[in-house]
Image (cartoon, rainbow, N blue to C red; front, side, top):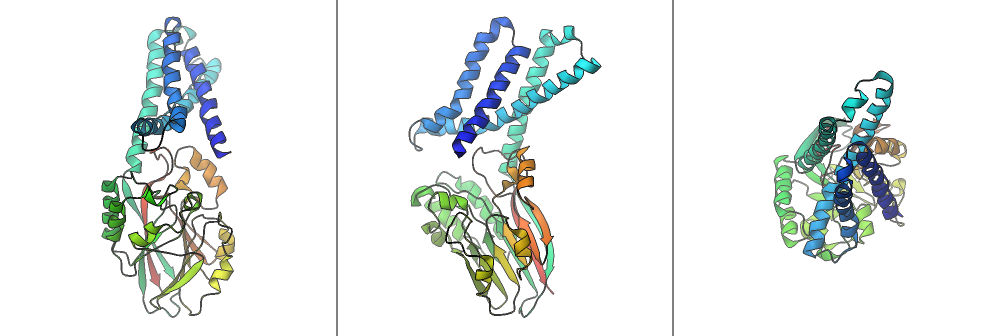
Amino acid sequence: MFHLYLTLAYVIPNIYVYLRINRLFIAKGYKILYTIIYLVLFSIYPISRNIGESGNFVHQLLNLISGYLLPFYLYLWLSVMLFDLFLLFNLIFKFVSKEKRRTFQYRFKVLFSMILISAFVVIGGAINLNTIRYSNYKMSVPKRNSKIDKLRVAFVADIHLLENTRIGYINKFVNKINATQADIVLFGGDIVEGDSENETSVDTEKAFQNIRSKYGSFGVVGNHEFYGRQQHSTFFEKAGITMLYDTIVNIDNSFYLGGRYDQHFRERKGIQQILNQVQADLPIIFLDHRPTRLQEVGQTDIDAQFSGHTHNGQLFPFNFIIKQMYELSWGYKKIGNTHFFVTSGLRLWGPPVKTTGKSEIMVVDFAFD
């Protein structure tokens, strides 16, 4: 069903773009050539979904091209929609005469501008995706009986690791994490992608082993680990990440750290069932892949919860849809007793372009008062 929706979301806007560009900008003698070029480019995505194996070079090349074509068509569609809106207003206010709109120079400039703007947005989105940045926060939570006064947390989610994820990027990420000098490193799910143990490389595992922090690295699984049946992937152990499966652990008698299964897992426990494992009066930090049921969590003793999953929509204007779906789709918000943090993710799933949010590492300094 998901792929059906994705296909319809690809086909219907493309039909609209094809027809409107053909009607408004293409001269009679070039319509056949335009149709051929458009159909060739349009067919790359469906062909890439149905040809060969993932290791096939042609398949990988088509996947790469379609990854950039998908957002390009999205922004070309938005550009055509905006131009049609302009034409509607032009009927009333007569900004541009009909004679001028029919000239080759005018049509060329408008079409070229729409293509250029769409291309620049995609290029900017690709650069944004590959630029790792920090989001810094400072919070105070009750100290209770903790023996420490402060805690620095580095949090990241939605890495979607595959065997072909560039090791240079992973090393850059590890260096960025280590530069925070965090006391603890947290991973908020969708760490690995794919449906086999071979989807991550040995080099990636070794790179993750170089992450340094006082208390170590901890994580939870997300919906993509569920899809690929990777919730107990050997990658986590090899990478030095302690996974939390509806459990809560006492970290050096200084604070509790809890983590839940993603809601796709039927065995997922209720939040209070997990908190019942708490014995000492210490600050509680929690991991849940999706930022759902925040009001319920805010009524518990959890001091801070970290989530991912939303990608803040990944591509404009989907961030506005995501904002309606989640009480907190990106950033920080305090609800009840709990500080909530939702990251837009380090990487993403699908097109290698991010035009909303950023590829971020959240760094939160907690003062235990």
